[in-house]
Image (cartoon, rainbow over all chains, first blue to last red; front, side, top):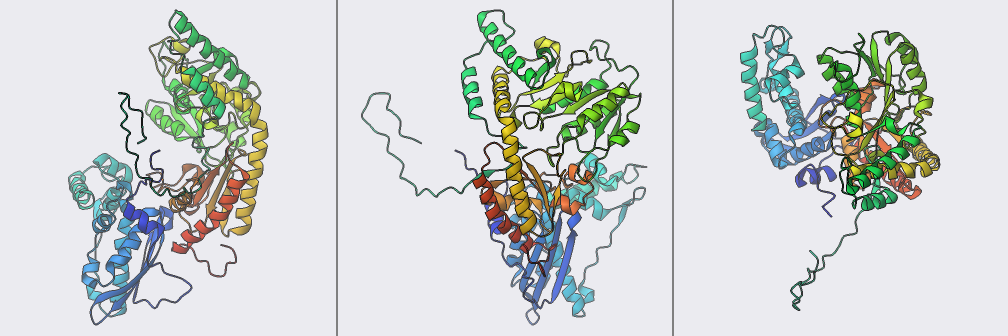
Length: 202
Length: 422
């Protein structure tokens, strides 16, 4: 008989899914230094991340979380919470979805967006910490840029569409409607499509 | 893997592998019978025996005649189960193929195929049809057919009064599924087919989830076409059937052979057909009693969930529903996570969550009933079958609360504060 429990996910994902680490217990009070909540239940994923910071060393002393989402969302938050403990805030700020997916030994393509939420939630928590401690200047601003003027589609939306599985221009158009009216933005959209695909999937 | 006889007659024995400490397998409970079912023992037997028949049913010699006789006997049994004539049963590869055949017929106005559109270029379907209807409808829309979709209420029922307005003299075909695969809701097919016929339209129903689970009589329902499949009722996969009324127009989806009276080309799947007839034969004997048993088991599970788990809602019609189908939304819990934690406990279910399907949108059926995306993401379908026992339900009752508690404990979208139940 073939192994009935061979999963669609890696063993690492399974390990963190079955025994998730550092879950925030709502019964006990957690005196956090920063808190970030990202995602949307309607889209199927939401993550809450709280951190404690060792201010003298500038490192993340502790991290706890809660996630509404699928197995890979739960596993990516769990592994991220382990990884960032003791990490310099500046380094934690730079963690990318790719890093998280790599830690998990890879994720199926359509699950990459789950891990994206992890690093977003962490950055949101760090931003919150910066704001609480008068370091607003450290909060990185990523202003969104409108690429398709006709349909009002931003670079951020294009990146999200790529993370949600758009690989070709046609798929991107189906998801975002970018470039479906005058088509002037096609060249720039194609460049972004290439950029985000290589950033997240290659 | 195993020690085997040495064919050379030597006395050498194959060294046995060291016995590994075999871990007791977790108990497994299969509650995904709407996805597919285990073969009925009688079907296994029939399929096994059918393997001796290998002639091509189109051949004139005795081998061919043997296959032909077996197929025609199977056809007669299957036809009588739904009160049809043998000639009205077309064997196809699956329920999906049966559904594709019907919808594609509308877009084919070829002079040679015999299906006459008569100036009608409209198809009416519901929002909760199986993807094989919805996707095909999108495809034929590109070919010039106009598609009208009608919605359903909170329980998944098609609005009959609305249908009376939607179906017009331009409607060629109305296709509404008899029982829904996700929520189990059963439609009033007789009423709907009457409305279609008053306007001169043809009526098709996708009865893949209905045939063999609830009584289906094509004459009482008044349908022109009806799709069904073997593997949902303990028969083999890869075999389905399409009932096509004797006088109804027909256009083959797969051409190039005289099989099935020119309605479906390709050498007949003798093993599948015999297996399907065996499955139907068993349903004839077991269906009514089993429906009662499954309804009781489902009610047991439903009552438990209702009383012991907080913040839940049931999807589907409370009465007009498939006996073994129970669809529940658990607030604040995501479907794929629940499914996989249940899987670890050995319990197999399915979910309306997008995550499990590879797309990002949750179940179109659940959304069509008007529930929010969150409830759709948190929906679990338990579909019971002939092998489901009271002890299986006991096991689910033991494990389910633990799983819900775990998922909600991790969830950022659920607070257990002030709640007595899980």
